[in-house]
Length: 328
Image (cartoon, rainbow, N blue to C red):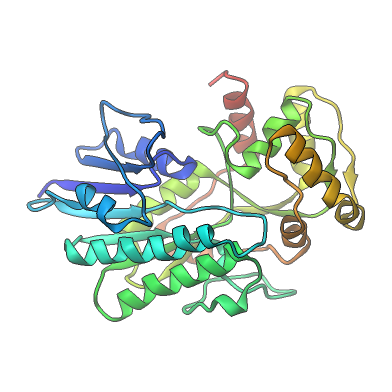
């Protein structure tokens, strides 16, 4: 039976990278995009305009799947470092995921993969963070983390009840080529290359290549155990180290990195500058709190069960810089 893949968030950084992986396979690909979003692979992918928060708009992409082995990869979502509990964030990340679950059950898909986030896992001070089996939004801080925790629990619950064969992946901070700065971490590199980054900050995060996450998604879809979560991370790297590596590859200027207490004092100024320049603020209160916390994640389970192997981070930065400079 021929395989059919439905990818939500098909115009996003991860969604489009997953599609790149599928393009050489003998399969049918359907991509869900919002009205006005670019159809990146029109000759290979059948694009459907829809909104995960509007159930009726999802029916066309799920229709006509009889006779196919159908898999759904739900990557659509809002990534927020604002730390607020906006209704749109909840509608897309939680209600939207619940709508996708319902459609998967109604149409009898073979398996659903949900792209959650390591933010859905409670912070454990002084420990390397690994997978957990249940999620409560009250256990995590910030609107984004709370919505991802609630959505992840909804997927796992559907799997536990036997309503849906589903598996969950939880990437750390995604960076890499094929994005022009829409993603926050790629935006950081782009601003540095363009001379628009005023300074770095102390602290760091676990950064992972979008191509490794895409490969991890495919491996989880095919090998992951039903109802299980798999962390797709790489390694912890400081913002200072990241900027220094980018400087080495571009010949740019060395940037100072502000102590976190100084960055917190300047956070209102960062927001004002972002408003005036019509750009997203990078150093929000939530972002500063995140990079100051415990952000050491283990991908041992994904490596052991899926064969997940993230690449060297220097290669990721080289390819990201080349992509942003139009050399790739």
